[in-house]
Length: 330
Ligand code: FRU
Image 1: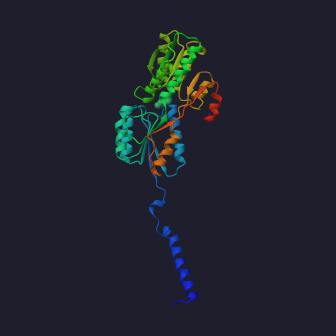
Image 2: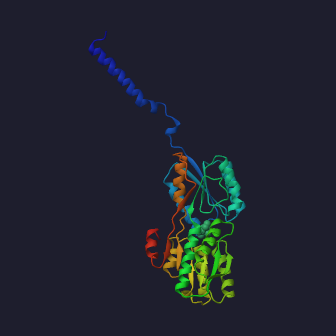
Image 3: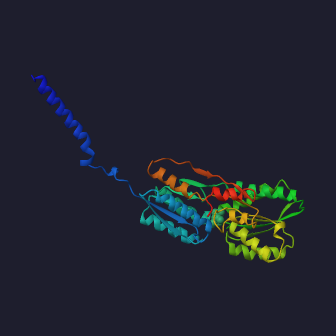
């Protein structure tokens, strides 16, 4: 039999042992899961040379920098599908935990994206799409909707300006990239309500200002009257404006529409403030969202939605100042 005092001592030393064991166990036998796991992410960019893509890379890098356990490597395919396939193959042989890709053109990139996905690597497709469903998720804005808004704006403007016919020239993005198709189709839906609107010329300038400049010169030369220029991105719209101005056309009488609305000195919002463009549409890069989802997929083991659709906004001279502030213009 233990005396009450002894019993108290035995009991409290037992409790102490248990308590000590409880608090020493993790430190004396560290488990691997205590150390934050390092994640290697490969980001395959279609073409660094375009300002909007530079903004996307910057936003990805800034978001990734907030997670010290993310290591991110960027590649630049320079608008070359074969190069982008090789870039992704190189990521796969080096070993990555997650792939982010903004594909140059849909069809040529589909199989390498599917290959990564089938190897069990989560794949986040950004802005431009691939074919089929062999990827984890897609993040981007609704390009058909943006095209439709641009078309509706055009239909309204032509009506208000009593232009009949109202002659549109279109500068398209790279044909095999999905936003070009969707922005073109949406625009045609948007103008359908006004039969006076006629697309008199449509050329593929591959998203590039230099090509848009050459093609605009050809299209303006061939068409003495142009009422509207609809370009699938701002660099092409601004290039076309410059050509019209240099040709001595009355640019105030022409509606210039672009897409992207980057808050940079050469970007679309500033071009609206300067009176070069009449309207542009915010096309968010999705860079921050891609990193957010990468972390949720890798660390929280979340199953993401198939699509995350980002918002757009119309920018005109009426709100360009506010938009400049809102999007952190500098
Ligand atoms: C840049 C860019 C943007 C455009 C996007 C469409 O390469 O042309 O200007 O909004 O790609 O994918």
